[in-house]
Image 1 (cartoon, rainbow, N blue to C red):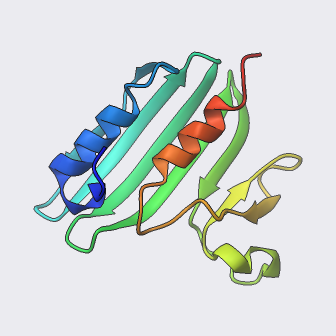
Image 2 (image 1 turned 45 degrees about the vertical axis):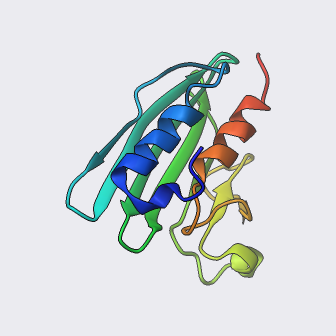
Length: 139
């Protein structure tokens, strides 16, 4: 896998394709496309053999080598298991250590947020999210 996949559309597309070719991935609708010479979008769903479905969306800036926005959601059937997002919650001191990155978890998944040290704007997050979803095991 590329050491610096956030450098171009081609590199990030290659990174995603290699990552999603692992045996745990049953199928994927993830597409990476460019909406300008310097930016891109990665979006779609990843279906794992353990019954978990990931929905991903990333906004990418290849010129700055950054993920500028993201959202990752994990489901089993219609049950949302967790999600990550970068929406800032500056008034929540429990999230300060990884601001603005955080994870929503049960119970009360909408309001129960914890720090997300694996998330970043400067390196790909998809590997960590995929590994977490794989570790959930089958029903």
